[in-house]
Amino acid sequence: MMLGLSWTAWLLILAAPALGLALALRFFHAHHDDPQHDHAQHNGAAHDVAQQDAAERAGPR
Amino acid sequence: MNPVVITIVALYLLVLFAIGMWARTASHDVAGYYVAGKKLPSWVIAFSSNATGESAWLLLGLTGMGYMVGVHAFWVVLGEVLGVTLAWVFVSKPFKIYTDRYDSITVADFLEDRFADTGHVIRRLSALIIFSMVAVYTAAQLTASGKAFQSFLGLDYTTGVVLGTIIVLYYTVVGGFKAVAYTDLLQGLLMFGALLLLPVVGIAAAGGWLPLMQQLNDTDPALLLPMGAHGLTLTGVLSALSFVAVGLAFLGVPQLLVRFISARSPRELPRAGLIAVICILVFDIGAVLAGMAGRALYPALADAETVLPVMAEQLFPALFTGLFLVAVLAAIMSTADSLLILASSAVVRDVIQKIYRPDLPERRLAMFGRITTVVLGAAACIAALGQVRLVFWFVLFAWSGLASAFVPVVLCALFWKRTTRAGVITGMAVGFTVTVVWVLAFKTAFYDLYEMIPGVGAGLIATVLVSLATEPPPHAAAEFDEVQRAVGHPFRRRVPRPRATQKKVAV
Image: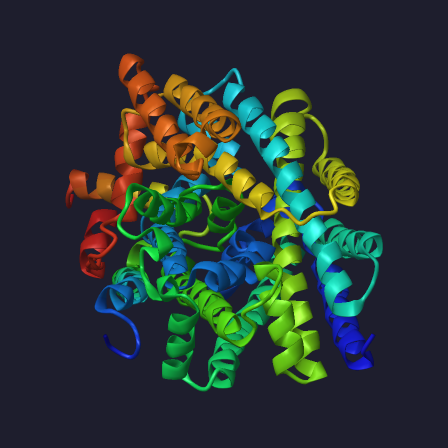
């Protein structure tokens, strides 16, 4: 017993904050300043990537 | 009726009216009326999605659950937090990129373009499911509005339902999605404050954490057990699974996916996701702990779902009682407004504009949107007036009906390139039908297993099996790969390409 509850009860109570915050923070740190979306307002994101990839495939001329 | 409580409620309603007026200029065309022109910032979409997902069920139903089953209710917290987190981390970005690419403003827009559904079968099916479930869901929220006005202000039930309907309809019709989203932000903040304050004061009133645990243990030791009174039996495990399954809906119900569409850029999503996760943690943990504290303080309540109003009245001065009433109204209205505008979009955008009258001018369609919202609101109001008992069963059923139809197909559309149009149509129909049939024929005989589990499971299996037996549209695989590249890895930072290389290419 710890603070009036069993360890299994604490495990259940703390699972949600631990998992939720760990995943959300990792996602935030990986993407909050993603350069891919600098100009991706509307109808842009996927096309930007496609254009960049095509340009890369073409290589320097 | 306490004048302080009435003043606070009046002030709250005035702010809602003001937001409706302020947002009206953004709602003159279809995209403005239904997704605020895709210009919303992270704070707004985060709070709006949580305030929409969490209805009166959070403040009255989940607190009541904490009161009734204690620690066992934390399975709901786990399910909801995981649902919200996984939705923002894995679903939000690919969905936003796809919907920007297609210029979609509804989930049916996205599914139709993704699977080249030129016959509009997905649109029709989607509109039918949304319409039927939203009618039930909104009526339950307006019933809760009547009950809230009745228990806090002493108004009669009919006046409470009609007043709630008029207020929601006013700002939804005048300000469209922008008003809905910004009122959701205010409403979400009110719910956040209430659910932060209530458990703290409740635990303090019970004498602190350890005395609270001691009192709960004396009342019923099962209140402190993760598996509750059933223990580690089949009934206990299925009960825990049913609680966790409540969170599945966050992965794909249309009223929440629309928040991702309305973001002003994919860059808003990581910050919004973090805010949303913190917000849902406070909402859910606060509600369950408040219910547990209420059990220790008022062990003999006839109806567990009145624990929040009782605590608000007994533990706080009139000013705070007013704020708690406003928080309950906020939870009701933030869900009802979003449902009404969703059902309106299913009629006007998905059926009228995209199937029958694509030639109609945008302003006229937006006007049709307003008229549809009023008609739906009035119908839900009439249904609520006939249904005096507050039944959260309706809320959970509608939540499950929408999730079973949409979650499997949205997940397959985003993450499995082999998904086909026939698979999606079958998955939606099977998921929805299984939910309804399960409730009508099997639920009571099967340990009360929540219909979300068979509904989503059957929808997923049907989508996969039929997709494997049919061919995806020819452009889909290449497009899928492009979007995946744009999305990137959810946990890996993308390295910016050096400017020099880009210049070289341009030359």
